[in-house]
Length: 367
Figure 1 (tube, one colour):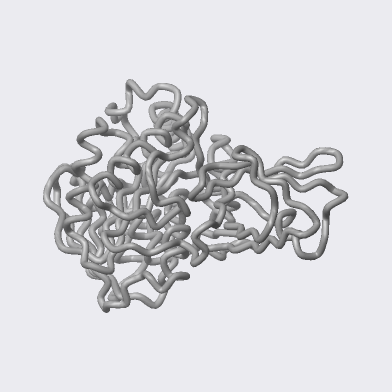
Figure 2 (cartoon, rainbow, N blue to C red; figure 1 turned 180 degrees about the vertical axis):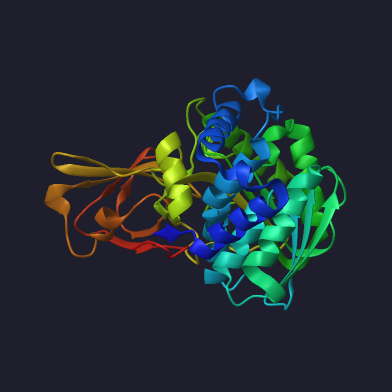
C-alpha cells in the first residue's frame, strides 16, 4: 500500500494558505474547481489550457497531494536495482513542476536523501507555491531553485529528470524533444522518469514515445522487460497498459476525494523510465511484466504478461496448481514473473504442473 504522508499534506495546505489565503481552501469552491480540472484533463481535453478561478488551489490542495506518490513506483524500482544515483545532494530537474508533486513525492519516498532541485514551469505562481511547500516539508535537506520557463527549454545537468503530467499536453514531436533534452542532461548513471495520466489516448502516446526514444538510442529501464520496439500494446488500437496501485490518502485529501469521487479507488498512472546506459529492471531477460489485473474463472486463472517475446496470456488450470507455480495466483498488476517451463504457442503460455513461477515486486510497496 502506498501512502501519502500527513506531513506532506500539511505542508502543501500551509503553502496554499500562505500564497492564496484561507478562502482558497473553502470546501465548496475547492470541490467545484477540482471537478472542473478533472473534466478538462479527461472528457473535455480541448479545454485543457483553460485556468478558471480556483484552479491553482485545486492543483495544489488536491492533485499535487494525490499524485505525489506516483513517483514512488519508478523510484522504488530504480533503488531495487541499485540504479538510483547515490550522490549527495541528488540533483533533480523537475520539468513542468507545477505545484511540486513530483519533487514532494521524491522527498517522501527518499526520506534520508539530500536533494538539489531545479523546478521549471511556465506558471510562476505555481512555482512559488511549490517552493513554499517543499521548504515546509523537507526543510534544510533540500535546496530548491525555481525557473519560470517552458518545458521545451534547456534542462540543467541532473541525476534525475522528472516529467510529471507534462508530455500529454504537447504534440508528439515536441514531447520527444523534451525527452531528448532531458536525456542529454543526465549523468551517466542517471534516469529520466515520465509520469502520465492513466488514460487510453495519453498512455498510447507514451507507448509511441517509448519507441521513438529507443530509436534514438535511449534504454528502457521500466516498466518494460522488453527493450525493443515496437511496444506490443500498439498492435491493436484499444490496447494500452498502465499501473493501478492501492493508495492511502491523508485526511483532508481523502475527504476531497470522497466529495468529488476522484482518486478514491487507488493510484492510476502510466510511466516510463529511460536511461542512457543499459540496465534491466530484473536480471531474467525473459521475464513477464503483469500488465492487467488477473482474471479468474471457474477452473482457471488468466493474466496478461508482457515480455521480450511480446505480450501473452498466462493461463493456469486449477488441476495444474502446484507449490512451484502458486506465485502466478499471487500475482497482481505491476508484478514481474519469471517462468521455467510452460508451453508458449505465440499468444498464450500454458502454465502446467511442471512449470516453476517466481513472482517479483520491483517497487515493493504492497501489503
